Image (cartoon, rainbow, N blue to C red; front, side):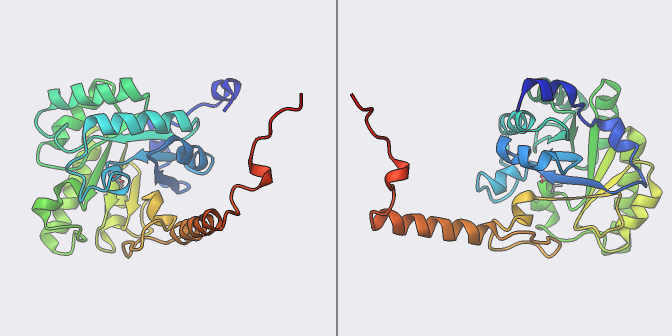
Length: 275
Ligand code: KIV
């Protein structure tokens, strides 16, 4: 990536995403590393350094074990790999729920050390005061309602939300409150058909759906899921590639070549200079 290119490209920022409400759908994917961010950058409006990194890259059973340091490290990598897409970094479990002041210190650290354009927080009882506190102090915030991956230990696993009337109206209220608190956009995850559309109509900020139907202002998926890196994917994921199969085939061919002494060949070795 040349420094000249870097200088001439303006990164998409929170106000640009907010202005896309009701217009062309906003394309988002997760990214955790520099080379993948570079591949996604030309195609996506927003790259989320999701705390799903804990499960996808680090093999954790859920996102509870993800630390601020992990998010900062992956945020820095994604910023280095991309130049145009907006980069949003997830605030990990335990870094923002306690008090707005603690959330501010941690979010400011993420913004300073990664150079990302915003942070994302999952909804919870105290979250709207925190969103307002951060936004008023210059930190753009993305909300997250519906299925909350950081709360699966109390919510009973990765299950679709909004299937009862009580849950439906609670999620709708949470989304409206996040918008009123100053969030520039909101992720709507794993909700029953119809609720995402209702939220999208109710709030003035863009909704970004994952497992939430086409009734949102944009869509996001975990990149590794849509590229087919895992043998199992949730129902709402469309697999656009079979990287698991491709990698397996490539590694088997490499292993065969090494065992048969076909690799390395003459084109893949160094020769001493004559004289
Ligand atoms: O961490 C993540 O990848 C997310 C997406 C599922 C939206 O929050």
